[in-house]
Image 1 (cartoon, rainbow, N blue to C red):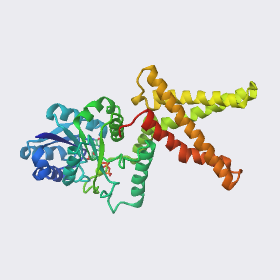
Image 2: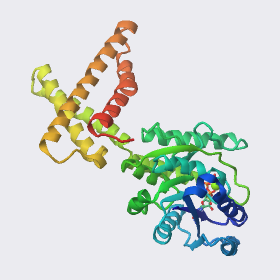
Image 3: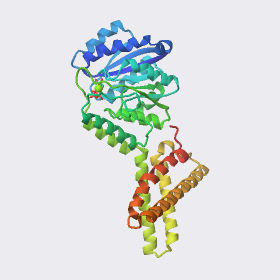
Image 4: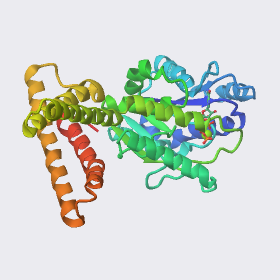
Length: 372
Ligand SMILES: Nc1nc2c(ncn2[C@@H]2O[C@H](COP(=O)(O)OP(=O)(O)OP(=O)(O)O)[C@@H](O)[C@H]2O)c(=O)[nH]1
Ligand SMILES: [Mg+2]
């Protein structure tokens, strides 16, 4: 039998936890679980002032596989970090679950996560935004829009359209992924640790899968999340950590280098235009290559050897030449069909709609190879 540790962070969830814990242990009867898995539950309580602690302690008499860990109130990320450490040391699980204790996440969905794990996934996200998943019908429109928009921003901020629910707190993660991530996520004590953990897993080639969940409105007690603060933390995190954002910044730097060098060579040094352009674009290409390697994609840097570098630089040049050809054809096509007046608009459109996705996709597939 393999062990599962389900971590339930609580802050004043007395009524919810009393219902949820028996529901979780009831799942042991499900054939998917009973054949292969042993469930242990760790409640991480951050000094609740209601009866949460007492309720959990009472339940431990009935369920010996229930643990109570008490921590200071220092944010959800910190509570999870302590829960993870405790579980890894005391329970030695194969899989660790993250789950809200407010009955928003349904215990009956646990087997679906495990099926994905059994099929080879390292990190299963309970997703509200895939087929079969849902958010509560009675959410006010602004809450729905906020949640959807938030997820879209994260999705495109990381340019990972394959992941549909970045902020979900219902997840099953193999213990090795969590173990490796501890040193990293300890820097994120709030809700944003969820984003950091998934980002870490992706960058460390964990196999990600999603399973639909039907998110329920909490029945008792109050929400603890500060949506405004959380959004700011997410935007800040993306800005500092997304390879896509860094790739865009590198592109802008490349444009400035290209422009400045050609401007000086042509205007000040009266060099031929073709030669100036050749020197400026190649300098920008080399600078983009180095900045992307040591910054944007630093977690999958090219091996430290001269031939590997040279090969990649040649490939990088080919991809860049491709984007010059695409740009020229597209702009010329626009001029041909709609006239010359709007050439700048064609250029902006082709860069945003074609060149950026084209280069980012090929960099990830050809030069800084991605497993996910
Ligand atoms: N231990 C601990 N648990 C917390 C803390 N903050 C929130 N939680 C728990 O984390 C879970 C999720 O918190 P919620 O307040 O429901 O936040 P949410 O589910 O993201 O937001 P809602 O959609 O409003 O419910 C609940 O079980 C909370 O009790 C904390 O600082 N410490
Ligand atoms: Mg909740």
